Image (cartoon, rainbow, N blue to C red; front, side, top):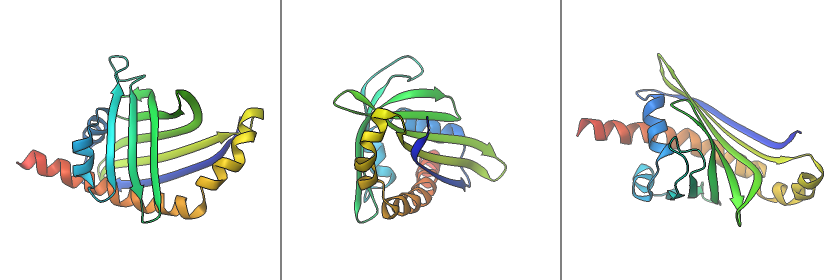
Length: 167
């Protein structure tokens, strides 16, 4: 099984911890998500609770990625390992898609090390049928916009969370 598109954005965010970021994204609300980045973030919330550790939680994301792209999808938490890793698998009409968003968070002396990984598509028989559709959406301009988005949004989250602690 090989992935058609694998896009990783890595960065270090000073003055933040894995636990802070994990807690924020594992239990999202639309209000907090919009507060994080009002111009780009619209909705991110749990639509149906899963197990106690959030595995199988169903969520909805809706955000703008730069001036020309929108990312809107349903997903469920495939794996959650506090405070270092969350994997969401995207769905459409309740069907699991070969599309995964993985967030890896590691504390370091410089802050939290983040790896934001988007994996889409499989090279199996059924996956190959989706390849042309996937390539329409996951273009180089989209990937560049996603890279810029990630490098802006994570420091913004640290700023927002640290302000709340100071209040």
